[in-house]
Length: 346
Ligand code: ATP
Ligand code: MG
Ligand code: FE
Image 1 (tube, protein in one colour):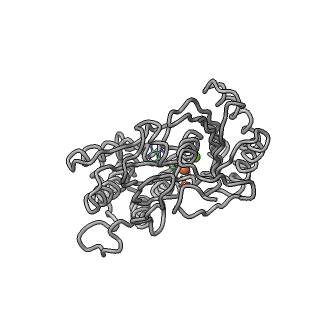
Image 2 (tube, helix red, strand yellow; image 1 turned 60 degrees about the vertical axis):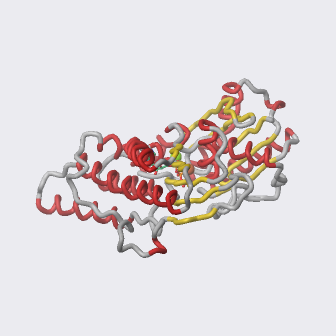
Image 3 (tube, rainbow, N blue to C red; image 1 turned 180 degrees about the vertical axis):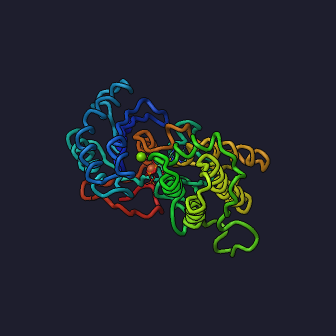
């Protein structure tokens, strides 16, 4: 069967079309350019851009997939979490499409989509896996069974900032352009990762058991801020490349160490790394090295499937359709802070 997925939770308007685990095609529009001068996504601007581009993105995805609308069997839409005004546009559009085509509609969790994106590239998930989700709004270690039907178990979450949020804030401190993740990665390429001594929050033997899989990035961000202020006060030249590389190294070290520990502790040999920060080249390479040494199979989607897109929503929709779940109906709305305990929200 063919499932169409629509994503509008932030500043990306994405439509993907998946047939039985295979991505047939997708299209993406982004309002990122309109947010650059504000240094972050402006909800009203993002919502208007979704409204203006959603029909064109749908048409383009159908063309790219070589599928006609009447061939679509089901529709999945991100109903949360995300920016409320952005979510409203997608949920409304998906309801209209489903009503017009008389097809079942599924309200899905955005982050479950990030996880499902990997199945488009690497096939079905094993019976049990650990997922490290690192994005603009999430930093969690999850224990997964069947993604479509089983509850999602949180081993740990961030106590404060998400990893992507930390990248974005540190980039701003260093005067690097938005979005911060790609900027920091680029700057770090020519920097020395050992130049600035930065903490590894919640890592090491002194960390309490309840924080074994928890993250904290706001202290790391403050340490970078202090370093920048000191340089400004003493007039020492600030080597943004060195700070970027040192920061990136600290984040990557914490993420990979905890993810590998979660696999070992639970005797699970598959680790997924998903979400926008999984596009980070240093994270991918350190994870690969350490997983190989630990005998863990690492699955990370291609960078284009890590950041927000429509294919990932079609992917989780396709899994849910195949599980035989009941459609969500038309009464649901957008849940901007939907908890990540199930893939199907309604
Ligand atoms: P969520 O998925 O939690 O709702 P979101 O959808 O806004 O949040 P994503 O699109 O999944 O987030 O990821 C965006 C984040 O990923 C941004 O914080 C961005 O800086 C970060 N990011 C993107 N590319 C990279 C990279 N190469 N290195 C590090 N971070 C990156
Ligand atoms: Mg985005
Ligand atoms: Fe996302």
